Image (cartoon, rainbow, N blue to C red; front, side, top):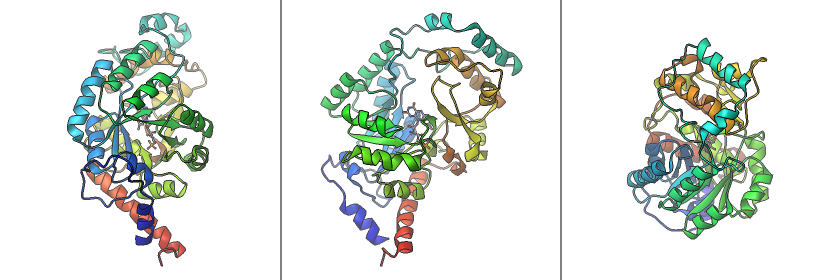
Length: 391
Ligand SMILES: Cc1cc2nc3c(=O)[nH]c(=O)nc-3n(C[C@H](O)[C@H](O)[C@H](O)COP(=O)(O)O)c2cc1C
């Protein structure tokens, strides 16, 4: 095990800023990508929770706040809070910036174009499940995905002191260039080798190879097939493995596939710092890998989530085909908000990957992080012992 560990440490690129790292408690696990930020371990977390993102950064990894559904002003305020909680450790922010969205933030204009059949289907769900009217606009309808909002979100990110900008879908050239001029690194989430090459040409500093197992917007290629293909396509550009990374064995496997670290999302959903509804937490803990489905009914793009009456209804033979983004957002946004606000249990669901099978208990971020790092060392050591490399 020591042999492998020092071999991994020997590849460290100490060419980046060496920031004080927060956690002296976890054993270092250096790969070259750590050198970009002065990380203790190449563990990257995506989270909609600022306390989770901050805690991961303080542990020695890098927490990235998912801000795509936040208003520009919220992004400004929340990134200040993230910095305050993370101290001097590196932090990131994620935006989803799909091309082809409408110009203006005008949900009513989109609403007027929604097909009657789809609106009737949504009204039917309100009736069938006794969903009271929404108390407020839903997360997907409080503003429209539009070029107008995207530009203002990008300005909010540029005004912040985040170290990393993670592009979920879309990488506007001007934004990438301005981020880089401001000293921010760019990571692009890729679901295919083709995406990887495009992202590198567009200026990504490193890539996430996000496999089919993953939560939320995901592509058709499984993590095991995707990661080495993206590594090959990326050449000298570092790659992180994503999609099903829930244990140290997964991190070690990602390293063996040629990645330099892991990008994780589902791993943090049951942490004490993550504010999740108790009913959803119960569903996550009870679920196995075959309890997730891919549906376009959430946002119009393929999206992995917990199976529920929501996904079942939309996959029924008489259900309409979900609309494209942002039409589906507007069609279902208020209903989704009402389902959560009124706790309509059968329809409640959440984005999660196939790794949900490992969500078993509530633990703090620091406990999950330390377990992940310890398990990674153990897995690397076990492989070395099994193959005789440790002698
Ligand atoms: C609840 C949830 C919401 C997500 N939302 C986004 C998002 O807004 N933008 C994005 O780029 N990735 C999003 N992701 C995907 C993560 O960035 C990451 O690629 C994915 O979670 C990795 O797979 P895993 O869940 O198996 O760890 C989300 C993941 C989760 C769990």
